[in-house]
Length: 384
Image (cartoon, rainbow, N blue to C red; front, side):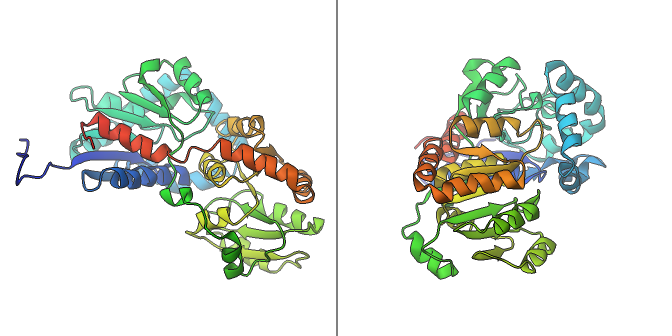
């Protein structure tokens, strides 16, 4: 029964269920960015709930997907094979048909226990399962694709009311997999609001952190878990003795940080573990060396950082590399010596670094989270 509204009766909050899983940091961070944007755009008018569908509702061993993901992602050949073997209309449909009987009870329980005015999915592996589970009681469904370019077929179920993608390239893939053009929106990847605020004084922040203010800053990251060949890349940059400051974010990888602390550094270097100040680190830096994750790339664009991409997940992140290169916002450098060569060009040629920085900033979509928030509001009839 609908609660009364009007004088003395505030409008009931709209319930939005966000489906994600901690299989990579991008799904959670995109979800949190959208929930933050909903509250910024429509204060007090939404009741948002995040559900890790793998962990909370799917049977074993799928419930352990967040723990299984890191070791699998460290075997890129296996990851790429799995991605390509399951991609495509017919193959993705077969994956759903084979797996649905196994997850059916969990999917139905998820729907039953989480009443919502709108469901928002940010994960490809839940969409077709939920659509089948909701056949007798359909609910408004919005898919927000959190890959930039190389979007797997499992992202796209034609029964979704709307599908949001980050790039025109992803839009073409969606149409190829049967999504009607009228049900597609090209908006961008949702990024936390704190990345969109310019740093008022970069030099003051560098001074506070103890960084030199007379040298360009190279920021080297490997995600929240310090993944990828980060150690080899850091050592190669050190051996090159570039005329720059190196800042390394080791994430939760305490062993990596400890090992790097024992290195005989030949250039100014600063090592950090997991940090919640990544917007400040990016804003205060001049170049970013990273794996080709969509979230980090989107954040770097907002900060106007030239990108050196040193690793990628085959299949899933291949398109990200091509996208960055075509924009002239960065380079693909899969070997440490290639990373060093790219950085040397930018350290020794501020003009070239500035051109890449400007290209990066042109690609930014800092308002994506707020635009998606307004789209969600429109779907459930909430207006300013």
